[in-house]
Length: 200
Image (cartoon, rainbow, N blue to C red; front, top):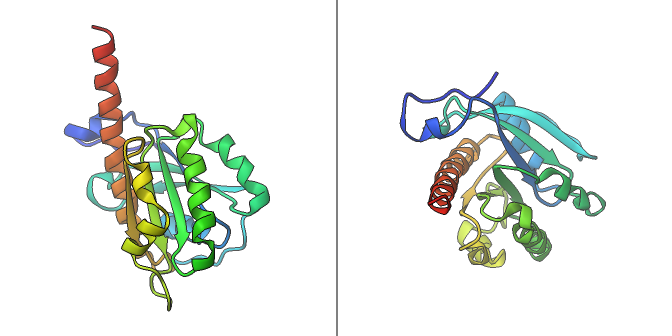
């Protein structure tokens, strides 16, 4: 089943197919929990992903309500990260999940995020950073994570935002999806304008 379009405005910029989104992040960040919480709207016990999971997810809030996304959840273990490059081709959006409590790996997460952001295949692709596990002790705030991950470096090459989230209960997840969708719409609209201008 494809994405449902609104009667006018931004929704009409997209075709009726599900939008291609990749979900990346270090192992144990909670990516698969995010995926199945948004897919089934309930907690699903998961195991470490070896390879990838893929599900069609339906937006529930804002402009993304009723819109479908094909979300590719790629394993985050060090040995699997080279595979990320295989899945980012022609993606319309990137969800990068971070464990807000895993302070010792913030730098590792930052390096991996910046590698993806600097890949020529992703330039201009919107990125939403999901600051997961905000309910746990010692979770860093969104502002602290923004600094630790040097997210300001994304400005100019990627539309981006960061959302606090608690994946096990679904808090912040559909809002993150909606924000990503809104950035995707704007990016597509902007790309269309650039193409029109280049033809003149």
